[in-house]
Length: 183
Image (cartoon, rainbow, N blue to C red; front, side, top):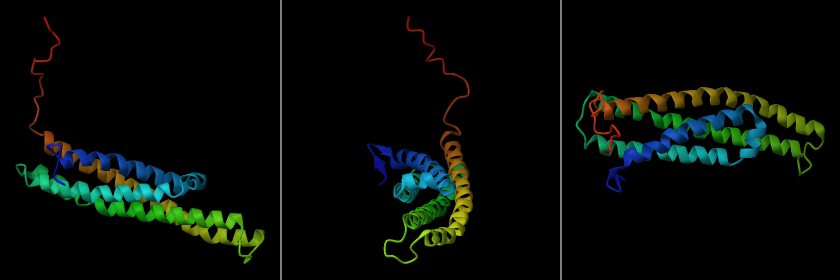
């Protein structure tokens, strides 16, 4: 996809990444540190992360098309270089979203008791919950790290893109055409 309604697709698709990465990162951290939120979100968390991951290569591909259709300079090259680094962060968000979702489902299943009779009783439920605790702690710590990295990277990429797009594209003084005097 290179053009949408006559505009470069990258200019439009980038908004999905700019919104979805921080939103997914926030949802991931909240769900990782607050199990009740993870239970409420359920499958929505990994689905959100999947959509986020899918938006990154689409945006990057559209950006590569745009890069070949604009004058190349150091700012454009820097933005493209930074943009190539977003996919691993989005992948990390997806992996951790699946882990948090899985750990939450496992905890819910243990709290509901084993329906097949194995490990029935309070002890069985506590044992399963205890074995999920290290996974939840590791997922929470990794979620904070990956979420922070992803958000910082989106900021850096967006900042470099704005500089590349606008570095000589405006005047620092008003043009005088929009002074509001209609008469």
